[in-house]
Length: 332
Image (cartoon, rainbow, N blue to C red):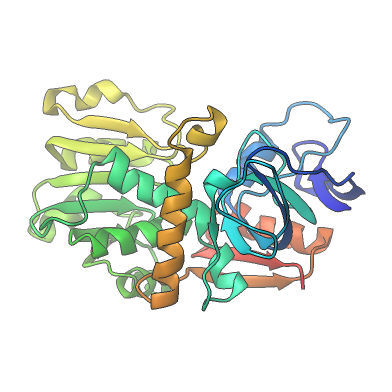
């Protein structure tokens, strides 16, 4: 079967190659891939390769397709089901014709939503859901109107869905955006207030009449904003991030007794935790939300055709770091 991979850390190392088709066992599904989405983790993984690989590495952590075969322990899916998922970091990704994936991190695809709108969402929705509801411990069914959240990089992939979920949970959402187009984008997704991350966040937030913020989510490089985060977070508040801290010191949060949490969406699958099935459940809810219109897909760019050129072009858009929403590559 056809697959696409990288042989070193350069973007121009993408190659098409033939890979032997694998058969599913246990809880695995064999899915014929119809669409993929490119995420920053794809770029970070490629850049982390420090030698020339003998076999190409297959990236891709968003997938949509049809179940072709199932393992003997599969309970929730059958051949012919349309599914979507965010993948497992320890296995080959979705840049291939057929992918093996554990059913516990898979969901039935939305019935009324297009492939491109659906496949753009799994990784970012899982990341945002775990951030808000597990790491920040936000309860979406109680009255959260007195709670504030600052989402740094609100117009990005994760920020776009985190803004929606926080809004639906009833919080006062402050999102960062730096251009008129992105300001409109985050407002349309549910941001109550918008601040520019290229300007002084402390002054902007205080000018809005807000002294401190209950929850802050860092979705880009935290170091340039670290002192602003330390100043703005409320005592006993919570800061969570999906990115590394290189220069910033977590100890700066100690005097405010601030809770800190990392979010890495692949942890449950990497360590084969029982909570892997939570991700499948999150995605089933996402499918319902997309079909009902409660959740808006954040796809903004679509390429048609699985080939090296389209994968490179999609990768380049994400790698530039200015992407609003998500980019998708469809098989057809």
